[in-house]
Image 1 (cartoon, one colour):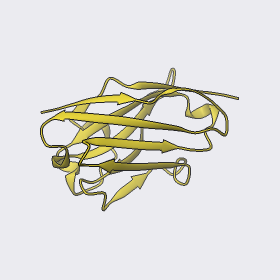
Image 2 (cartoon, one colour):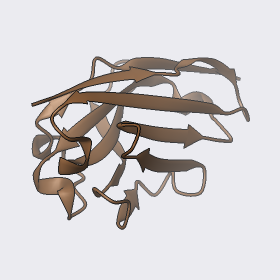
Image 3 (cartoon, one colour):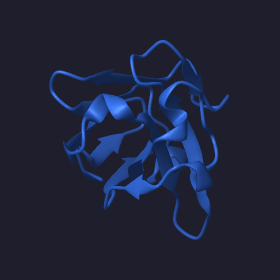
Image 4 (spheres, one colour):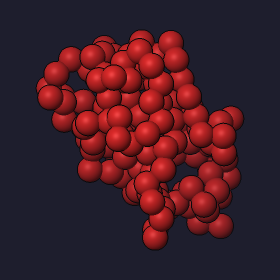
Length: 126
């Protein structure tokens, strides 16, 4: 198993940037494909981005591509999400998740992820 802890959330102004981190412990980090999801107030959890074990395959939701960058450092057991040009609609709780089947194939569905962090809250003011 793997345990995931997100950090880096907070308050940002529209147009600003935040960098989220997700630190893993337990089973070898490179065993997993990793993803970021978010849940806005009153809405369902939605996919943001994912990355395979070595970073060779990356996928973004259309609305975030070009503004968000997912990356990982397997030597530090850490997943990142660099968020630029933030918009108020980016407000929500951001979750990182680990997927065994996503190790080599991009996975966009939450049901493909078996391990989740507790989330970090991002608030973007206009």
